[in-house]
Length: 290
Image (cartoon, rainbow, N blue to C red; front, side, top):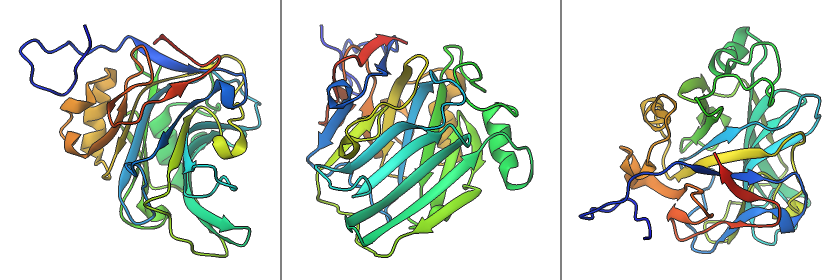
């Protein structure tokens, strides 16, 4: 029997959260978790509000000295990674989560907005991130996961208001509000508008199609559970409701479900519960028990 979600049926299927998706440590497009948005659903820009949330079980080690690309969207077949780009990454060498967006059309016409949250310093502007993550003075890794649910997953949520700048960004670790980014960068010599019509390619667990879906991580594979994308800035209370004290919920029942534009549960495949866009899970990447 097929599973139906978000509809009123006489015998609606029970919510299931048994599976997740594992991003293999093997590299290349043949090992990616990817889809191409052809109907402009996820063409968020610098002046629109949006939120991205996912559950992640860290598989990497410390002293990796590279970036873990959690989620990235960019113009399909782009010559530059920055073209119509939104990405959420963890920079292991500096123990920071980074939210970045911007656009690049030529070598000299580009811009980017970048906010970062640092977790191992309990002082000044960094104290909110320190308290939110629970990592202490040790960097995030498979051996130090900070605050997690009973399955060792952390829910990471990034939100952006209609403000085109880092002041419009916020980060939540589970339901813990780390606030606006204490470290910010705004750069670029141009101002090309982020497109609302270009097809965008979205990837989980690698650095995107424009960079060959290079692997990010070492140790054991990093595993991802429910991924949601919203066309609004989720409030702190809405993030808390989504976290649900660490128990994954059916996001179609969330109070902001009318703003839920993408929802992937990974229950046996990469098909979407909300959206017409299904992820293709290639090569060594695979659906696994959560």
